[in-house]
Amino acid sequence: MTTGRVALVTGASRGIGAATASLLAARGMRVVVNYLHSGAAADEVVAGIAAAGGRAMAVRADVREAAAVDGMIEQVRAAWGGIDVLVHNALIPYVIKPFKDMTWEELGGKLDDELRAAFAVTKAVLPAMTVKGWGRIIYLGTGLSRQPREGMIALGTAKAALTQFARYLAQELGPRGITVNVVEPGPVEDTRMADVLDKEHKRRQVAATPLGRLAHPGDVAQAVAFYAGEDNAFMTGTTAAVNGGMAMY
Image (cartoon, rainbow, N blue to C red):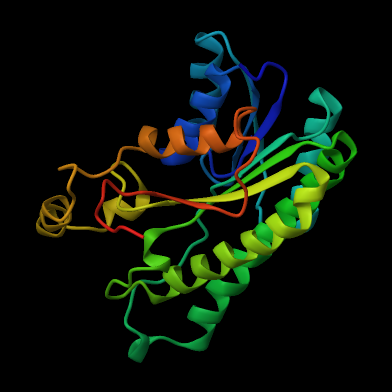
């Protein structure tokens, strides 16, 4: 159990974020359910955690804006103290189109937003983690950063940059007792990304997966929760592929 630790899950009103927030709360953490637009959904996640005996609060913030992130961290600090676990899951908008039709604003904008958000939330949680000499940082990546798929160049390139950012942080923050890892899901049911795929595309993906189905948000949450816990004492700078064997590396 990890009773008393405070976890911030960005983009936690639905999908992987909501499943992760609920699982971390079930394991004894106090969970901050961050959201941007879906306040009612975030409140439902908090209510579900409370009904199960856990502790959670919903906090609105655009994680691309440093001032908004700092305000969120201060709100949490006043209630519960510093953040011990950061799960950066918020999905920054992106376009789906081939490179030949893409503008620099679409590709460069996604890169800038992706790293700006990771930079802002990481900077904000590090002081408390450093003082405690303990911290867990988990970034949500995507298998598309390794295995290209048509039209997904903006997302795949931005998440590949995020994964390398995580490795550099792992090297720098290890001496402070802070681990940094990445969870890279393949296709996941019940997420916004999955909603853009037609039935035939999903059928082909399932056929290419040795375990015979797509991931559920809870499958990804289990990997995140391992990285977030006390038991993960000696893994940092690693990437967990949660894809049922669709891609192996």
